[in-house]
Amino acid sequence: MADPMKIRATLVGDSTEVKVLMQHEMETGQRKDAQGKTIPAWFIQTVTATWNGKTVLTAQWGTSVAKNPFLAFKFKGGAKGDRIQITWVDNHGDKRSDEATIA
Amino acid sequence: MGAALTAVAASVAFAQGSTADAIAKYREALQDGNPAELWEARGEELWKTPRGPKKVAFTACDLGLGAGVVKGAYAQMPRYFADADRVMDLESRLVWCMVEQQGYTQEQATKVPFGDGSAKRSDLEALAAYVVGQSRGVPMRVSLDHPKMKTMYALGEKMFFYRGGTHDFACSTCHGEDAKRIRLQDLPNLTTREGAQKAYTTWPAYRVSQGELRTMEWRLNDCFRQQRFPELKYDSDAAVALTTFLAYNANGAPYAGPAIKR
Image (cartoon, rainbow over all chains, first blue to last red; front, side, top):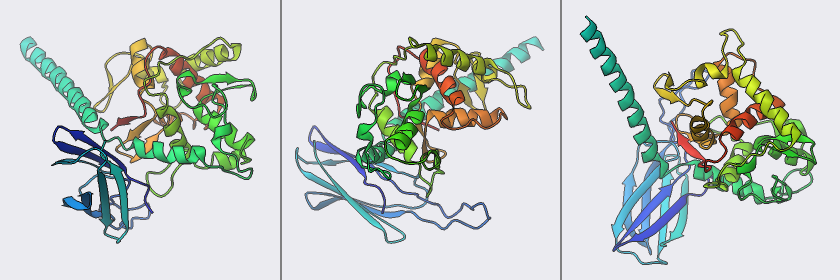
């Protein structure tokens, strides 16, 4: 199981700014280990963000996204105390969900 | 002929300037989402959880400001610890607490000083990230009042200027003059106050190229490797002495780590 995400959500004017730091290997599948064997690809495939249960962002990621990725986005709306949930699923089927409230 | 040479020299200088600017911009862009935070979070967990054969948490560990006090402690390290009768940097002190309070052997405590950027993760790096993060913004204030601190500083200074190894290198070969570079990276001049402050206060740091958080002892260890020196032993007096020399020279500057570096 991956470490928890760090999520910060702040209200800026009439929109919410969300910043997420995720812990993931994001292995490209192009590197080789010390024995010369290819290290299999292992990366986050989909990212979903919900605001009080309503989806505000979905993203499809590939191997070009950096290790331990950082994601920042804005959406219209939101109020202090609202719930933001971020979920990612990787190509192993592993999943991680974390929550934060808008500050 | 003379004019042509001048033109070449000018364009080289320009290229260096713009590269350094671009690297500075790159660092600034990354600063917001510094993955060091993930290490800090893991370190905080490790700090508060009872560990080792004696099931003691680091909250019993005195970093110089009292048992379990983390806030601002790193800005005053290395320092002399009477209970160990030794000058210690942060990493040495963590190891000491693991051995003396938590019941690990020295070997167990220092088994994984540095992670490999993947499955092999170092608890010491995470703990260091957490502790140093609690000194962010606190001015460096390392004191040489204790005679053993003076000895350590003098030893560190001597090591810094000591030429040796197969390449007749010293730390000062690269870090003793302004505007030296390794590949495209500008190297800090650690003999000046500004140079030492800028360098020391931004370690430990998350290294993007390694996907790891790296501590000061890692930085020194890798400098030794680059100089083709014998390996700098983790938690050794040599490592502490060099750290003492650099930390004291950085006094006065607000601590700014854990930073992010290429």
